Length: 59
Image (cartoon, rainbow, N blue to C red; front, top):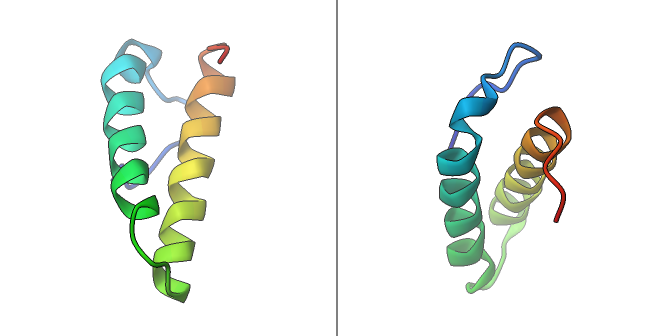
């Protein structure tokens, strides 16, 4: 998981970062979620949205 996403995020890394985050999210969502896992899912979803918004990537 990417630790720090900030306003100076380098969009040239977006393709690889998004793929990694989406794979992590898919692995977690295929399990029963406890509170900590749900927080991780929320964080991953937020990171994915941040990169898509920052780098103007549309679904």
